[in-house]
Image 1 (cartoon, rainbow, N blue to C red):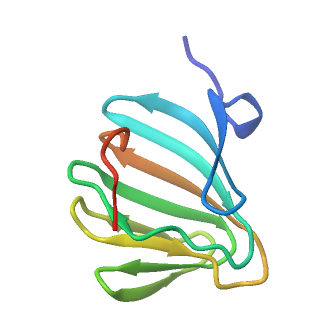
Image 2 (cartoon, rainbow, N blue to C red):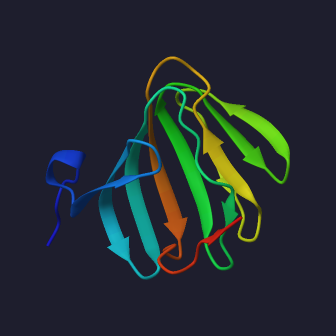
Length: 115
């Protein structure tokens, strides 16, 4: 069955980090797509994935990504590709919420190593 997806009809809502929200839109073994929101001033724990590559696309706000010790700024309507094995985290250094789409291939289920 074909279904138009949004956070309003997501497979599930979850909370992560420090008051961050996520909505699972696609949750399959080979592909995971989520919409996530990070409040101002929040930071994700540094980690990596042994198998999954990821692509983050900013819908609202400007994110800072730390990847292998280097920082990258990603603005609205921009994205960043993170290959498997790279140590990374997302930070919201701004005073506004971030809203973004996160695609992982394969899924990151049981494939996150926190540092």
